[in-house]
Image (tube, rainbow, N blue to C red; front, top):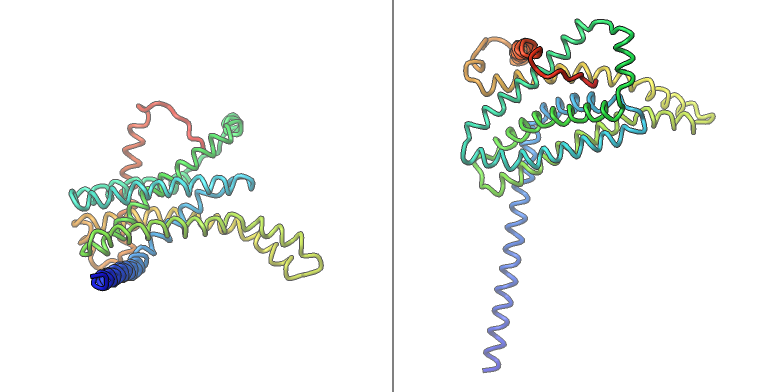
Length: 305
């Protein structure tokens, strides 16, 4: 009897061990599927990630050196919060009200188009400020200016994050729910860490350049490299500002083209990028016109930037 119990216990141990290894095998297989699905989703969202980088790098610059990292960290935290909201909502809507996802994307596209066209109009028709206005702007609280730019960056990130999450979700719609959740979460996290990691490198270029100049001594190469980094930063920021504005319009036009059947089949012989720019500009002009009409009736709030 004692021998029988020992054999029974050994068998149970074998079954438990095999069951444990089977679970590990299932987890490994799932992680492998997630890695493959995430790679495909990241490739499909690469264009949006590039736009996200250009837009947010432009919005995260223009602060004092001592405030660059704190501001960037505040925007990064806002971006992570955006993802924490968007991922579960997107999964729930896709499961129960899939048509709502399309309308949310279109509304986001209208906002991006408006923001892009507003930047263009402001650049083309920006009037010279009078002395009194310059003084008022100078006296504005730095904390208020900083807060306004952070909020603007987080709002834009929210719209772009919706697009990233929806595209990532679209690559795994035919897979099980667990794989959908893990894939979309991985892509969302990579988007935030990757984009704002690169932005952090960009905004600290001049500081790195300054340190290289200080420690260069008689090393000509380090001095030249440092001076080059310092001189390159304003050009990169200006370039990112232009690219970011174009990106806003392109992303908006892409949303309209991919989610509105009429626009999708409009001008079939045109290159997609040309059609998307046109759609973005037209939509932005319409929204800007509507806002300009109703703005006089809204409470007067001065722009902080």
